[in-house]
Amino acid sequence: MDEKIYIFDTTLRDGEQVPGCQLNTIEKIEVAKALELLGVDIIEAGFPISSPGDFNSVLEISKVISLPTICALTRAVEKDIEVAAEALKYAKHPRIHTGIGTSDFHIYSKLNSTPEKIIARAVAAVNYAKKFVEDVEFYAEDAGRTDNVFLAKVVEAVIAAGATVINIPDTTGYATPEEYGQKIRFLRENVKGVHRVILSTHCHNDLGLATANTLSGVINGARQVEVTINGIGERAGNTSLEELAMILQTRKDLPYYSSIDSRKIYNTSRLVSTLMRMPVQPNKAIVGRNAFAHSSGIHQDGVLKNRENYEIMDPTDVGINKSSIVLTARSGRAALKHRLEILGIELSKTEIDVAYDKFLALADQKKDISDQDLLIMLDIKFNEKHKIKLDHLQVIAGKTPLPTAIVRLDVNGELISDTAIGNGPIDATFTAIKKILKKQVILEEFLIQAITRGSDDMGKVHVQIKSNDVSYYGFSANRDIITASAEAFLDAIEKANGFNFGKSKESEKIANNLVS
Ligand code: KIV
Ligand code: ZN
Figure 1 (tube, protein in one colour):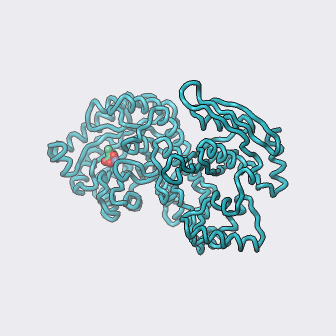
Figure 2 (tube, protein in one colour):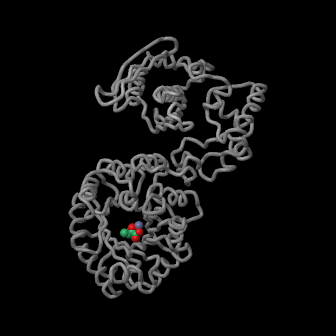
């Protein structure tokens, strides 16, 4: 029978230590709720003694989360433990995570102590934490660089004191997978009482080995993994939750499983990235923009024939709609035809041949060919190809009066206008558009890019909206970024409503219904 690997998420504690990524309590609650839906077993909600904000976040998260255990970090210091226990007082399943450094670096040059005193402080901390909660996790900081024999002594002592989970952090990301796995195995084979507790991995990514080390820890006996969304964390970050969860799910030959609902991974990743203002690197495994994007002609042709030719995971399993085909100079006709079809442009075989020659000429000059490039290449202008046209837009920006937009749309020949106020001119514009079209859509992403650097240059706007649980992308470019934003928003809304640039009867029907 496959064994369960407990997912301990520390996005809100180790992840949040990244400079510039601090969240307020409301944002932390939003992330905690998303983590609960994602299916994590333990949420490390903060380090309560470190600040009133952290204390409050642990307190408030404890009130609203029911299923996962809520964990609070402390040093091996009585006051820390008392404050953590207080912050956890509403938690349905509270856990105190206490510990101390065990490597020679920590014993001698950080704590100015001795191995014997470290064991005594570790045991005292666990004993003290046990007065408040049943579930006490102990961490041996810098265990990755700690001598295994001494580490075993510390671990044995804290288990005897009542620790329920033992965390073996590779705090500096120094260990190699083999070494880290051996460390876990050594503890399993040499520590009295180890079978009563769960051994936990906690790996940092300084050498890019966090996920490999975590997996090696699991293979050698760890049953809890400490991870963060998008792998965020101190310096190069922590093991990423999505990588570990998808390894367990994809590699059916590994005898483990987790309770993560993988289809919620992508949305959780976007939420954390947006709230923490920490972009995900495009080639990040599982959740990066390019993780399911194919750019070479051979791969594109293979994926279009059968996704599994070049994909080991189904993008829908991680909550991404589908694989994407990125058009570059190496793309073939099949990829171009596929992209144009998504845009609702159906060309005959001869038209495709002509379009492909134009495309290759353009792709030789430009690295990536966007939807807008294709439309420009085929000479289809925004207002020509859209059923809903932006007929008039006037905005007031600034502090007083409130940002206001006056929008008039030409919807299938009928002119309709409305006004709205918003947090800014773009928000006001989008609200006015939604009022006119009577559409409920959620704005998932909004990105403005300058094409070059001049302030009079074209701005490119990308938006992603969600309508009926499906995401749609919209784009426009204009010298006026508010106009470009409105057009990109309309572009996405049209796609959500199945418009096909005037080709399909179905689209016409939907257009007519939109303002009914
Ligand atoms: O990396 C580390 O050692 C930690 C501990 C405080 C658990 O984050
Ligand atoms: Zn850490």
